[in-house]
Image (tube, rainbow, N blue to C red; front, side, top):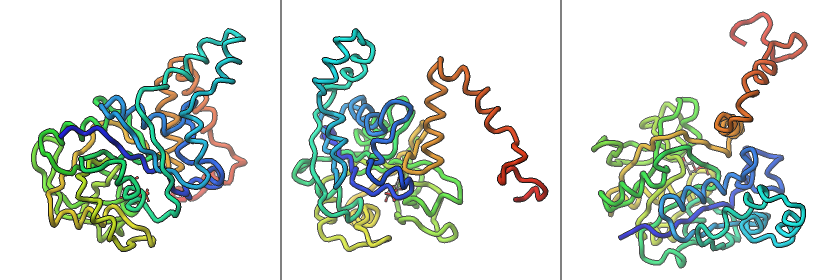
Amino acid sequence: MKIRKAIIPAAGYGTRLLPATKAMPKEMLPIIDKPTIQFIIEEAAASGIEEILIVTGKGKKVIEDHFDSALELEYYLEQRGKFEELRKIREFTGIVDIHYIRQSERKGLGHAIGVGRKFIGNEPFAVLLGDTFFDADPPSLKQLMDGYDRLQTSIVGVQSVAADKVSSYGIVDAKPLVDSFAYVNRLVEKPAVDASPSRLAMVGRYILTPSIFDILENQSPGVGGEIQLTDALNQLLAKEAIYTCEIKGRWHDVGDPLGYVKAILALTKQRAHLKQNLQDEMNELLKEDPQSPDSGSGDPAS
Ligand code: G1P
């Protein structure tokens, strides 16, 4: 069966980026001049997804406004002959159908996906986390969808992370199969590094079979008191095989402060007129400042 629908959970608090995310959804944080969630929707559309459900929460209405038409603004730009700006706000319209549903209580990723049950019905579907995008060709989701065509079961996108990042992600224990695919034995949500089965982290891209919904409905809270998708996937393993797909491309975890800065730098590099001055500016900025408490005088290990 073809993957046609996707869920984008975008209801979390974004606590790693407070206070910026106090009133502004982290999914709307701009990477230069485009909100993160727009990259994600463009990726889904480029992968062949036809319909998207964004699971929003309190304070996330601005996401709906962003993807709505803006007639007043369009008129304003038209009157002033600002056609390039007009193109920028119009180019996105209609590339994919977007629906919204509110998760009234923030009970975790697993719960947010469960909220999409009626929208999905009884077909396999994609999940793209709203704070993660990739610079990848083919698009990261397309890599998973191509895997689904061959394997016909749930697939989790993974990449290797440094040891000090293991406890921030869901980690998989998997046995290599073929190409970028491996067979999942078990999954652990945010393990301590010394208890982690590997360094292969789930990176916010999933293809799931609809069997996950019954499991999510009866799922008890796990790590952090939240209904965890990772726990539900462990239960799914008892019924169906799950594979990992090691995504080829650059992963941007925008929900993490350093990840956010790196995403902006990576995209700056892709824009010729911005890239030109970036190196000089960075050299200037990073020059040792003798006044700065961070300049590391004395102890080389500090
Ligand atoms: C969620 C998932 C985790 C995954 C991560 C990717 O965690 O629970 O398994 O590795 O997204 O970003 P969160 O970042 O919502 O705490």
